[in-house]
Length: 489
Image (cartoon, rainbow, N blue to C red; front, side, top):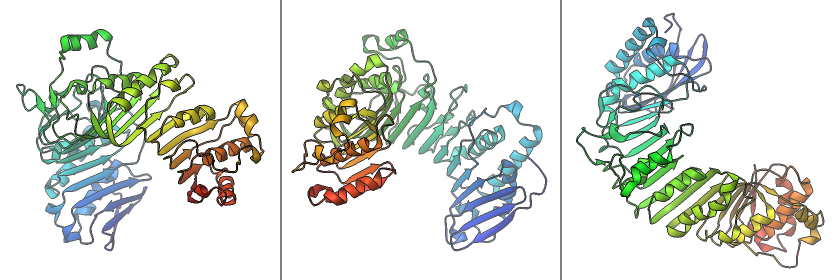
């Protein structure tokens, strides 16, 4: 760290319980005390901005500690935000010089001596400079044994050996290339676990109390999010079969008796969760995101009821599109869904077999660009659909010729109302670049005439005034249009 005098000045705003630090060489540092009274302040948030670097952190900490009448033993939450940069290499020992190590150690001493009661640590990222990673790792190491909440949005080194025995909320971005991606953690105390960039070969022994503990029980865990690293190699078929022969699986035995929210992204075929003991009849929210293969892997999850189910398929090879319906049918036909059944299809739907659609309980549908005629046929098969999001409606030659620019072709004596009896919210993000603007406008007008339950319509900025004027002109003739509110994107 630089040892020159930065000249930090402190401005205290009593009304909002906040401090602004200004100094030569950087724009501003904002410190939020989250209180109207310094004597009862429990949270400190340091936001670095502009040209602020870690070199100033020591001066800022000293500036905070000089505040009068502050009961530092009451401080239980520390949040630090560095400027967002693209993630780069991690802090290796050779990257940190001896002077920096000494300065960081002194800063840790300031924290440890004065803010001894920190139970929640929030480290906002991404960052790329190795020194910041080093400081973050030292902060976690300093408070790790007493932390109840730890959130870190960058893959900081966590290779210390002590046991996180009190942790209840753990939200981390892992370094999948590290030899040790997690320290030892008490799974019994965890209530929320969110891990990003999880390596495919992730091992759950980090949560085992000792080498003899089997199974690993997360007795209080209610929220579990696992986002696997998409860049890692998939397990081979032989590896998967070796774990599933005769119904056996060689992974750690996992038990989640209290789980209510589950999210999995880029699920691999040998994911331990696929074989875990989950409360399948009591899950409130399940979110599955990934490619066609990833979602297909999740079919091993045998839950029978869920309040809210979200499935997002963002990639599929052309030859797999015909199989998509079968996979989706597995979830939206065999599972009882209490409230929300949401599906996102972010790929071309050219070969989608409409006759195979069995999504009667679907309430939300999102998709990329879709042919207008195909869309109408899909909606006709979704009687409970309440929300639709599409990147754009594509109008083929036949549709263009039928719509043209003559409103008499689609303005009828009575509302059409042939589909979407519950469809209340529609978002169209963009217009078809291969279609004349006037034709796209006519097509969307025809669409809202067929949607009798419509309440909210979001369209591109260029189209919103036209649709708004259309609704005003025809709402007496078509009463359902009077309930439609338009928004521009």
